[in-house]
Length: 212
Image 1 (cartoon, rainbow, N blue to C red):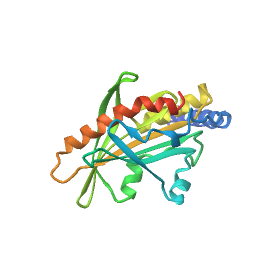
Image 2 (spheres, rainbow, N blue to C red):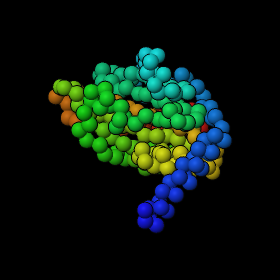
Image 3 (tube, one colour):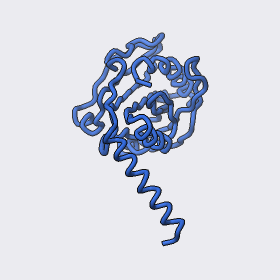
Image 4 (cartoon, rainbow, N blue to C red):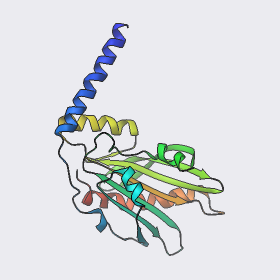
């Protein structure tokens, strides 16, 4: 093995050990407020709260969550899911839609970043997926809301998780997902615009529930 490969392997082992001991020492952080109290009305959008089957919660291993279908007066839906983890240990990590959605039969047609802007966060990027399954097409926006950061990369979420476990003894984190169907005869950009506006409305509210 070359010196370069040896140093790389040693660095990976060191980071893994630091993360392991950081996780062992990490505190379990609770949400600022229970997610069950998340607003059921956002502007013109009114929600019906939903719940996954128990086996889904067993897989997610989430500490607190909120699942709801919001509808505007025209009948357009937006499906919101927020999952909060007090700590992330082996087997209790946030699941990425890039892995979960294909397993549920959805094909990822496009993955890109979408820019949002709110007075509280300024300009931030979130992840946009264009999905299709048979004749159905949906747009998804999602991001990792973890320890005061809005993160739009699975890789950077893991980097910050390791860093914060070492420097802050924290591995708590949250995942926020919005979905809306592309209605028949609707332009895809209209569905994206619908999600963007809703995401910009809820993002400041999330800081009331998710600890920084």
